[in-house]
Length: 309
Image (cartoon, rainbow, N blue to C red; front, side, top):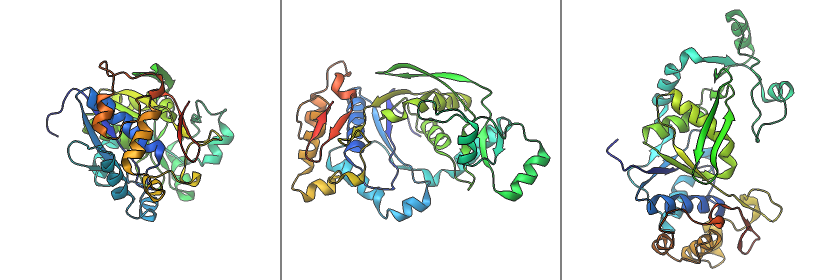
């Protein structure tokens, strides 16, 4: 890739459904943090789940159109994960001496491991010590996933709001049993390739930051800093989803809300006032580039309004 500024952030939607208010709020937050810091905001389409992507039709183009409608322009060319399989294979070869095949089902892992750690159930290492004969027998029963051998490592990632976040790195999956590169591998390989120095995303992914920072280090990259943004929930406290009604830009447009109205609602929920253009939103950012509490906090969609928490 060509030369980049010292700050590169990315937005990486999966094109399996249209973006809802929570997705758009996180995208806007990342764009504002990046632009206020004079950085580049790059775009990646995480389309490796081919069955779900195909079922969603032209979701990727709708997502990009929605971002454009809000004035959120990205820098450089789009990166499609589906075109990057050779890079993921290369990374697996680089890690070959630290990987092993795993034949466990989700049920096997649930029954063998303790309670989930920060929402993630640590893999108990069931297949880590299989010998070649045992591996050959299990391959007959089902294809194996590929896991990294972390050897009980722990790692600390840095978040510009949450601070230092440390966590245990388990033997997580790098390649799924169907041969698809797993999320944790693909995002790390692509973040290194795109020169990403900061990652703005939803707070539900905070616990995975040490794992991904560790893998970045193992692959010779410099771990990015993070900026985790509070999620948008429904009134029951559940993460916002399409089933919650008018939550996409198209839904809201059908109710008579223009993109500028939605942008104003988003910026107000971020504690910046009702800004009807992305430029006004950028001008509302503090000179320090670090906004106030509402920016990081969750928000609630009550079916009519987006309420700060």
